Amino acid sequence: MMLIQVMAVHRHHHPSDEFRRLQTEAAQTRVRSIQSQIAIGLTFCSVAECQLKLGHAEHLDAVIAKLRKLTATARRHLNEPGHVPSSDVEKICTELARLESGILALEERKRSNCC
Image 1 (cartoon, one colour):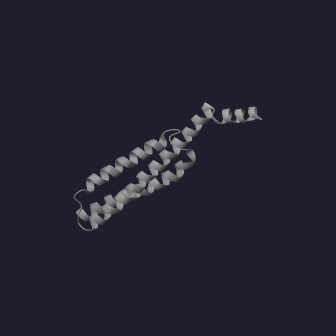
Image 2: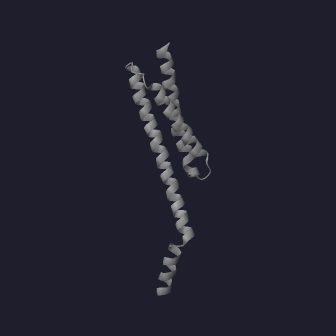
């Protein structure tokens, strides 16, 4: 009986199992981080859109530049093999495309307001 318990504990704490568990946990943390960044980007798009409607476009170029940097960084991470689980890539790409569409709409609105 004691041998079975010792074997179960040993198997549970095998270094390769722990390494895989930590890899999985780290990948899920990266997924949540990217999703949070995209959500923040969408919020910034909404705020910038409101500011533009109110005629306050002073910082719009800087906001758009930061949003472009955020999307480029997210895309780079999504293209890194193993950076995020493959099962999450499609969902994140969809969210990212939504943000990129928001940025394009913001740029278009800015052009139409300026001319």
